[in-house]
Amino acid sequence: MKIAIYGRQFNNTVLPHVQQVFDSLAQYDVEPFVYDKYNHFISGKIFFPKKFQIFRNYHDLVAAKVDVVISLGGDGTLLDTVTLICNSNIPVIGINFGRLGFLASINKNDIASAIHSLVTKEFTLDKREQLQLESELNLFGNENFALNDITIHKRDTSAMMIVHAYLNGDFLNSYWADGLIVATPTGSTAYSLSCGGPIIFPGSGNMVVTPISPHNLNVRPIVLSDNNILSFEIEGRSSKYLVTCDSRTEVIDASIKIKVRKADFGINLIRLNNENYLSTLRNKLLWGIDTRNY
Image (cartoon, rainbow, N blue to C red):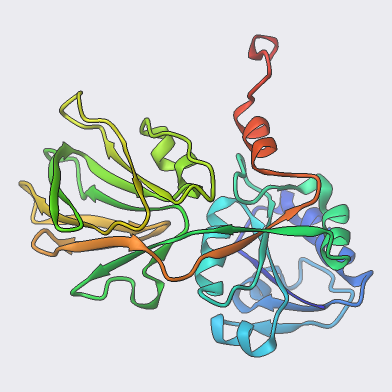
């Protein structure tokens, strides 16, 4: 079995857990591949009980026929991992070294059992849809897709912007706001949720448009079928604004028009057999718990 490991820089408190990942993999007939920049960071800090290979990009993962990618970090790290996987359909699992961990759902105290489940293939694949951004500037190049959300946001602290939104070419609404979020069901529990958007279950075939601090209080998030195409025109005092695909950001001119639609490919999240989306919601949002006891 070939397992790739991706991660970002971390503080030293995480070192024992990273070591446990490599120790657990060494117990099985696993051929590890480590992301080049991550290897530079952990060299001298981690003992490698087994020889490993290096990968640098999507092409290396595909050429090596990697079976699984493990993301070490929080949700942001897993979103970075998704850009490396691209349209290869390689399954990914996240071990959470961060805080909330909606996507990176494996607790750092469960590393050994999670690795065992991986190598014995005691897991299911949770297919998640992604969004794709289109523009005349070819923004983000080959990484113009997002698992969580695509967001339009004002660049500075100046006056609010106006986002004119069109649905399949027909005028939808003009949003006087700090910005606008287009989120997948996966991203409905991220930025969109903090701006008042609804929770949407994966597999619903939807996307949600959520305004950021709208001026008109009668403007609310709207849920649409993901077979629609949204297009946007920007108006405001500033000549520049921000557009993001998950954690990647570009500054572009207000004259640029963008389109958002469902991407042609999704991503396969690994779910161990003792977890599902409902258990994740309950654990992360403390549903069913009397918080007065905490």
